[in-house]
View 1 (cartoon, one colour):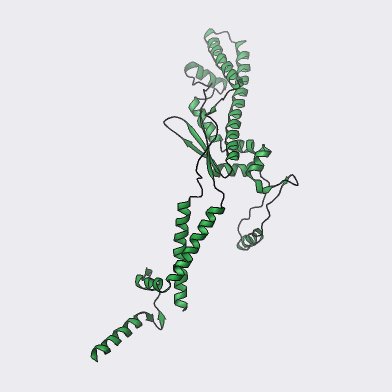
View 2: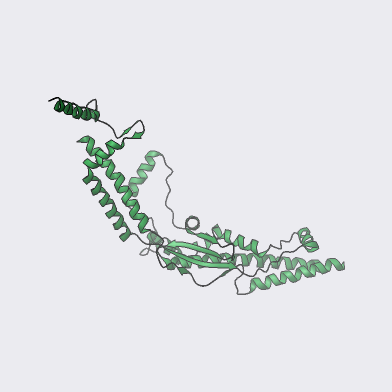
Length: 323
């Protein structure tokens, strides 16, 4: 009789430990999770956790079947033979006094080229190509009306209403142009140098590899031509100046320096006028990765499983305490 009474008291004590003021103990108390309570919830609501976990994994699989896969499109470029050689001594001082820009070494010019790939000049070269611009922003091109238009959306009015209510800065739609392409290049273009070989890889991840390849080639050619025209104009101006100076200078040493500089500028103008790569040389055609780089199936499924477990625990806890 005494043993039975003690067992009943122990059971009643355990039951009262699970309740505080008639309510179940919370899972988190004082910023610390009570694992005993959590395990009790998972055991009691295991079906809920499993159901929500399976649902999230199923949604992840559905996402993998419907999302557009992105492939890495790359071109490899290297510095072309530079027509601008580093000058020093009396010639450099003479050029500085005359206010003539003689340029820098090939490596510096190639670094300028790489920096210009994300510049407004590069964006303008893409924006001027209407066909390429339509391929980059296909949803905003209204082919029937041969014009740009804001893509229709049922969610946009609600989102804008929330933004207006919260006082956020609302972005007004504008037709694709230089600023939009500039943002696109800064977000999508990857420049990957190889310090050992000097080869630089330009990469864009896209679900339309053919369009990405055209963008990379257009960028390279546009900046290369821009720098070509810049040097051609400078060389022509310098040659005109040197010829005028030669007609008036009588000091032999000074004339010899001017003649040497004139020969260099003629060489620059000749190379800039040749139909060959000027600053950057493309090594082959654009290459497309054999496997998509996005989305990554393992990462998506793992994220779905983790999210499912977390949501399952949350719903299970709510159901447990409401029951």
